[in-house]
Length: 283
Image (tube, rainbow, N blue to C red; front, side, top):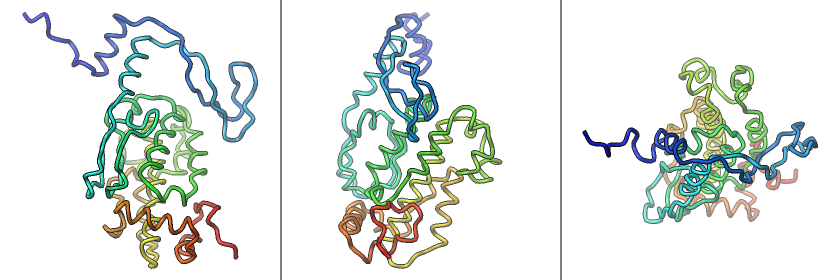
């Protein structure tokens, strides 16, 4: 009999839980916690800001769990600068916590940064934390983010919780009938997947802006199809219409031209309801 054989693979979720029970002690740490408008803070005051308020609060946590969190956060930077044809990158979310650790995205053709590897996001029950990581991810991979407004999506994200995701009428704001009727219950009852589906709207907006900047031919069918895919958790099927449009250097150049006031490029975006108000042209 091999007494050294582990019951759980090292660093697996089960291994972490078993180890915490053996060596962990409860400690009190400071964490950032987001309170929504109307919620009561620990000091007894009520949040009045529409966007809510994030403050430091004390939380009791297992000290081994805290150590594991710190260890996982210390990931070496990932250099992708030598991969010009890279479009899809599957990564642990720790590469975006607490800040981006990916180098060279501007040398790629990145479309999708998928944070499904690991448990940092999937096991989190904090919608604000998950959404913040998604926003950081898109700000990193898409220069088009400067030209779009996602406040409406953030407002919806702030309403996501274990109760609201049971409300079909709420989910209809950003999920298709197909998503609600055909996807497994495990997707529809999971905060991570609900927010992931909502974040697909950001990808759709970035791709629409990307396409409009690249060509003066507006393709309403393509744009409608992107929105439909976004609402049905089909981000892997969402792609630029023109391959050259996905090259980061081309995208960044066109975005910078628009930001710097290129009237022709900005005119192509004026009918988008989510255009950043900063770039609305005076009529």
